[in-house]
Image 1 (tube, rainbow, N blue to C red):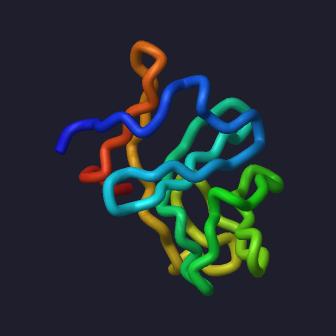
Image 2: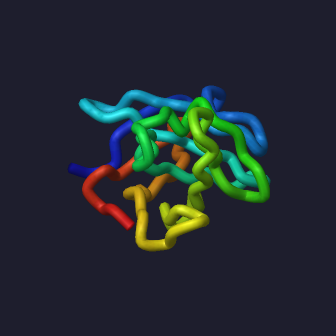
Length: 105
């Protein structure tokens, strides 16, 4: 599967915010950290919290349920690098936000 559209550029989260986007059977957490857009799984490995409803603190996405922090570039948990979420290539073309769910980082 090549890149698929998940949103319009105008739908992206504001700087230092995160947002949820449906993509097929998944929901993706798109984060905007100081203007850098990243995409990763939306489900926190702790208790399944919705990361896209969380906040950005010190460059990390923080789960709204229990405060687990995730690096949006590597997908690693701050407190335990062995805990890792899938991160996905994301790009913007012609004001469309495209994600590649097959190429996981």
